[in-house]
Image: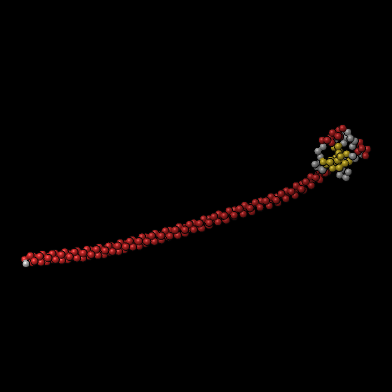
Length: 211
């Protein structure tokens, strides 16, 4: 009977120890679960905070970039405006120089035309004077040539126009133009309008224009 009691007591102690172990295991599991839940919660909170920080950083970077782009745009606009004003000023200066040059060229052309006209008028006046002087000179030369004409009888003329060695030699040296004949002799006209032939002595014998 005593053994049975001891066995029952041993079983009770065994069951008690098992129950305590089971209770401790459940407690440990519960603590582990709570720990995992807390870790997950902390992780989620950390990720959320990091996302917020990243979002704030991105917003700040975007703001800085927008400011930078705005400054660059304004700078480019100012530069373009300055360049346009400079181009306008350069064009105005070039137009002014061009206008001045055209004005100067026109003055030169007008002066040249005026000088040419004056020269033409002068030349015309000179030409008229020369023409008048030439006519007067021609008349004088003609008068001089006429004064050289010697009236001869037909017999004297026949004798004077004979061909001789002297007359032939003299005719070869004459450079004046042949303008006719006179009793078989070549008639030459000199630079002053006088008409003559080479006589038998090789000299010039002037004749009147009606011969």
